[in-house]
Amino acid sequence: MNTIAQVISPEDLLKHWQGHRNLTRRVIEAFPEKEFFEFSIGGMRSFSALTSELLAIGGPALKAIVERKERPYQESSENVESKSDYLKKWDEETDEINKYWSKLTIGDFSQTFNLFGQYNSPIVENILYFIDNEIHHRGQGYVYLRALGIEPPHFWER
Amino acid sequence: MNTIAQVISPEDLLKHWQGHRNLTRRVIEAFPEKEFFEFSIGGMRSFSALTSELLAIGGPALKAIVERKERPYQESSENVESKSDYLKKWDEETDEINKYWSKLTIGDFSQTFNLFGQYNSPIVENILYFIDNEIHHRGQGYVYLRALGIEPPHFWER
Image (tube, rainbow over all chains, first blue to last red; front, side, top):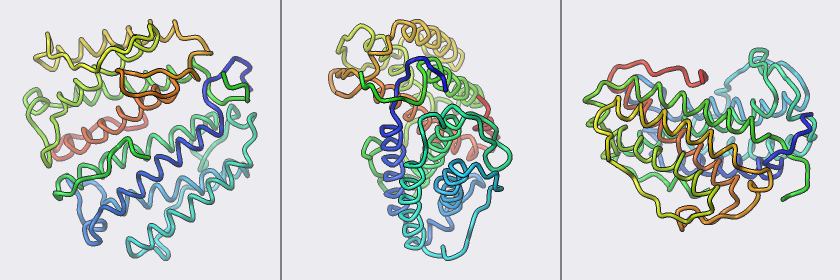
């Protein structure tokens, strides 16, 4: 790994990610059941479809990184038919992420891995991408909620 | 500072942030002049108002961190009346961020600072917050653009 001094610890990066995931969970909760699946603006995906994307990344991607398996990206619609199914799956993935994070060594972060067989970059960049992508799509969810007249949770509460 | 091994270097974190700023710049560019100032959904701020927020954070916040000055948060509307004014200011802040980043020592990141006299946390957390906040608001801009029938730049292009 890079030997120059560095600025964030693995523990703090996990806490940062799970903090964001906790906020996203509250955004999912804030949607009415029907609108979670059906509401969209400008032809974009519903928040349930965006959540399916996030669920297909988080846990599965971290598992793939730890195992160095270039499994293709795949969204699952199995057993996720209601908002409560999504929340249950979300919580399961929270545990998966904690579990696989504990298997990452400090040396892993700077190693290159070809995630999903298509995103070849240092593992730390892959992980930052997961977080950024979640914030990006959740920002979209905030607009959906506002357009529905619903007050979203505060961005700074994690 | 924390002595445990850490996962991202200051240089890579700056590159990550400036990559995001470059994408946000292209989102500003994608807005038609009028809609940049007037378009909104669900009572949210226009993208120009969101950009004013981002401009009041980035460079000024990093300068405040380096100088350890608890100056209050303040948006400026001086000399920013058109989209091109905003882009010019954006580029000036890009240089400011590079300049003040070079003055950060590795020990600074874990030190606590009360940014704007109100956000008291380790400096690395403040910086991650700047990036996250920008991604969040830019995600909002993506929905505005889609609602206007405009294709936003690809999220993964920095």
